[in-house]
Length: 284
Ligand SMILES: NC(=O)c1ccc[n+]([C@@H]2O[C@H](COP(=O)([O-])OP(=O)(O)OC[C@H]3O[C@@H](n4cnc5c(N)ncnc54)[C@H](O)[C@@H]3O)[C@@H](O)[C@H]2O)c1
Image (cartoon, rainbow, N blue to C red; front, side, top):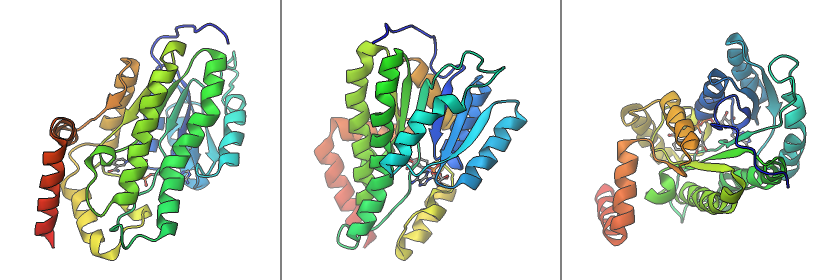
């Protein structure tokens, strides 16, 4: 292992891979990293949308590459990990061919439904992308970062990872898993100087409701929540996350409502569960 070379703030002049970079929070990460002088591999299952993000970055004078990758498929993630650094070499902006230094495991999907109505196939779809996608990213990039003696990882979880709202079991479980993985990695990688941050937002206005599997009886509520309860933007959340990463913090809980739930759940877990059950009873 090479000795760790301190390279300043991980979000500055990063050589970055962003998954799910074709829309929403992933696109905002790609734009902000480019604004901080970085080069970005914009990966998405939808190559066309990744390409649109690349066009936006190129218009800012940044170097970016679109890459088709389904995060739920280990062989595709392995291939991306092996090719990313070469694709991000650039004669002017990265003449020394610095390898990937920042991984944003962002790709994810939304899903709703009670435990008794969710199909097993829905669980597999959600966990395959939201949890296994992040596991694949950490699995294939961590050895590269350790070998290089540098690197940083942002995993996009959700306040659902600790809020555990009813009728969102598959999503909640996937995000709780991402939080636990991030906490474990943070401890494991500290001695290698590799920073880890986990982002846990409540509602951020993006396309997640359009691309998800939301049962018909929940779509009205989901769209209302997205339009009425989103008090932030993807750009704001991304800036908070990258600043927290630079400060060496593990958690980014960006909105006041997310921080309130986080505090009640931590300090009064039984009261929180009781209150949630009572509130849910009133909705039926
Ligand atoms: N928007 C919110 O309210 C919110 C809240 C908390 C957490 N999150 C999390 O933020 C992340 C980004 O979601 P978003 O809100 O920007 O949604 P979005 O739908 O706008 O963007 C998600 C992107 O991921 C891509 N994607 C989907 N499946 C993929 C796969 N298998 N492989 C690669 N790419 C894939 C999509 O094509 C899309 O470009 C997700 O992990 C989501 O769970 C979102």
